[in-house]
Length: 610
Image (cartoon, rainbow, N blue to C red; front, side):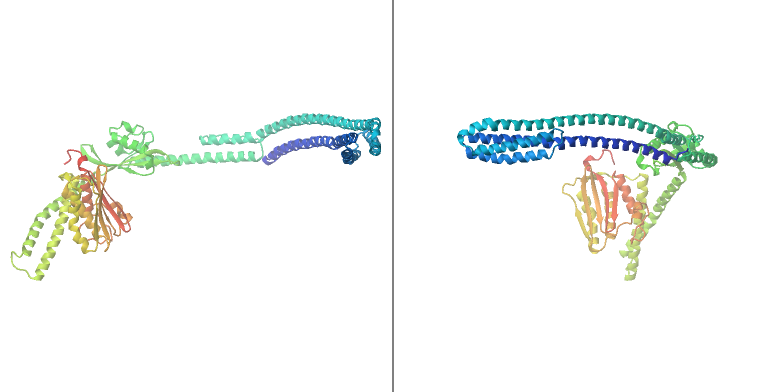
């Protein structure tokens, strides 16, 4: 007969329930017997023992009353006799109502007749003349007292002996119950072990076999077949498992073919990529490399990246693997100059980490983008700007000089209309000259040809000189210009005119973009070996999407109302601060924008900087 898994589990629990029921029933039966034995001890004999003790106590007190009378204390003796006579009768009646032993009834009835006789003689004793009282007591009452007390003690002893016998029977039953419980415990343990053995064969072994099979599949073994011994649920699960493994084998064959085809196509496409690209595993071994990577950087597959003649390649690979925080993000490095086939080349390295499903780095993709053409174009553009600027500067200087001479009326008087036109022409030529100067400064800063005249400069003097030209401009626009400087601000090492250009650019922008009635604040604070200056305004702020480009050349925030300039001011300011070994930064939100830059304290700046 074939059992289902549910039926097997039901049989196991039924057997365990049967064992528990047998032990429980046997325990109840034995405890009931013990309870009855104890009940016999308490109910059948305990009351008689108590009654006999009460009768002897009352009898002794009545005898003491007789002795009081003999001693002359008649009243006290009579009171004690009358107080204990009903106590004796009550205890005797309790004994007569609890007759359980064969001889107990006869002895109790006889005890009652003796006590009745004793009471009659006590009544006669109390009515007799005093001289005859001792004789009556010692000849009649005292012997009768001893007989009554002896019969009560006999009944007491009979009940005590019966209690001891009942106690011995209860002990024997308890010992028998203990032996029976041991027997049933051993029997139930044997049955439980038997049930566990069958359950191990029915349930645990097939389940463990399935678990082992899943581990084999996890290790890649798809050729195993689980034997099906039963038709229960585990057997059905085994059959379904075998069917699943069979389907997986088919899928693996088809997937392997597809994967092989994709791998070959990928390798072929990878080989023909014009860029220098290499895939490196977590151990630094080169897995795949394009032809450009092999020829220009010696990135040969199946070799370690540390064996290439370019140590910086292994360095950027280690940098990626030792920096888990950048997992999933592309990392860019500085442009690298490389000579190949006697030609100067420039490459821009990029490293992209390869992340598995467990968010672990399993390797990286190193991309070396050839930016030689871009560098050359940028250099041509810079030279073009420089050439144009220099070529424009000479004629522009002549035009400006001519305009100034005409406005001074050195060559003749001017009417009002002519003067207005010449003023406009002068202002535009001055603006154009400022743009050309900015372009030339930017070129000099980028090329590193600019010479900084570094000296110890008072921070207070710099701020006062920078702010002075703007008080009238701020006042005309209805803006309050505030200066917040601590009393112990140290001197800084700087090129005064260059730093004044930075202040001028930041203050002019702050006033330009601040609404009427707002405040522009220039402040400074000392931080270790640096002094940080900041300019804060209450303008509309810089939109978040443009904040990354704010220091780019020729960039102006779209939609903002600007007057003059071509977007070079902040770029030049950044280059000047960088040349001073400082940093410039900003933070902007709706209604508040702060630009800040730092300069070295004069006595901590490194020697030899010029």
